[in-house]
Image 1: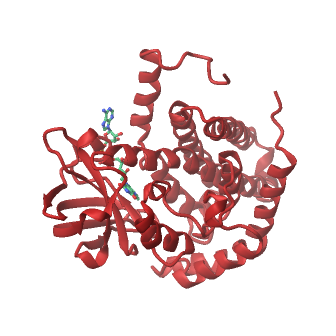
Image 2: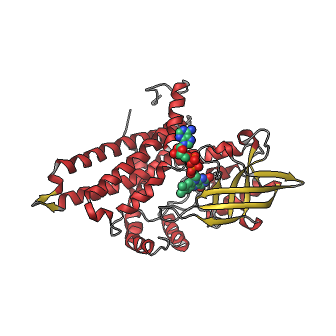
Image 3: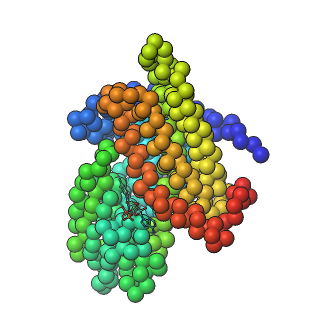
Length: 389
Ligand SMILES: Cc1cc2nc3c(=O)[nH]c(=O)nc-3n(C[C@H](O)[C@H](O)[C@H](O)COP(=O)(O)OP(=O)(O)OC[C@H]3O[C@@H](n4cnc5c(N)ncnc54)[C@H](O)[C@@H]3O)c2cc1C
């Protein structure tokens, strides 16, 4: 067993680390200033410019197959990259990627949706959640009724990331109410011009998702993504990816926050000596370090499972459950170590505190992940201690 990164993996990680340090972190002060005024941290044009600069570094389309001009990186390498970008709170992500399920597009859709999304010329959002169907996604009620060569969509989607910016949505709607969402729902590619509307939802985080309303929105049959009846399956595939991407980012946030706490513990003095000389502070640092490394093990194992071509559902659920909890606990301790300063908007800690709370909710709540993990064990799909093969 070799737990060390390969030479190539180290090169990927180090290149991204350099890029983030040189090109992304210098923007942090300005991002905080803008967000304090209620403005987006980065304008879309600034994000695109940064992405082009990253492209010059060779980083473009991390998960995009090489035949589409991407890097086609293995999941472990992608996880390492997300950890590095997670170290900065600047809302940056590498360009050149599209939703994993857009690869189910046919030739015509590929030209109209997939390729322009990879190029950054079109912006997508993915919509399955509804007011009455979040964890219980199979309870979606949005309907798509066949009418000649078209489908007519009616219903509402909520909490859709990028829903206010997207120019097309990948929407899952029920096409056969007798079967229900599992087997009776379908994914559609729906341009905003076809008539859906969106409204921004204010959250405790920066930016925010949107609700989308479909009122007799007409879509031609050629806009069905994948097969009729495959919508729920595609939805679960989309969500599956986030289950190791989110805790990978959480690792980067926790690492950076913990480094800040160590620096502060060594320099902030009370009663004539650094606060880091107190066991109370030392234990918070020690517990955080142990949890970061435990999460790293789970996250990399989940990514490795993907690369092995094995079913990553169990390992990804464990990685997201522990990773999301870990980063919440670490950021909370780091805030505590900084005392009153940690609570101010001078530092990014309160921002992380608000941001990472989401990690325990979206793309599988803690409770749903526990449900998956325990169900796998109770039904014998996975055996205790059987994760390394
Ligand atoms: C900022 C943000 C971005 C999002 N982005 C997207 C997106 O891009 N696309 C999209 O489709 N969706 C998106 N979502 C939706 C997200 O996936 C859902 O919010 C999430 O799945 C939880 O659903 P819910 O909010 O309806 O909570 P509910 O399902 O109503 O759950 C409420 C509480 O009950 C618990 N619970 C529910 N069922 C059980 C059970 N059986 N056992 C024990 N506990 C249970 C839950 O864990 C939770 O604590 C986003 C959400 C947010 C907040």
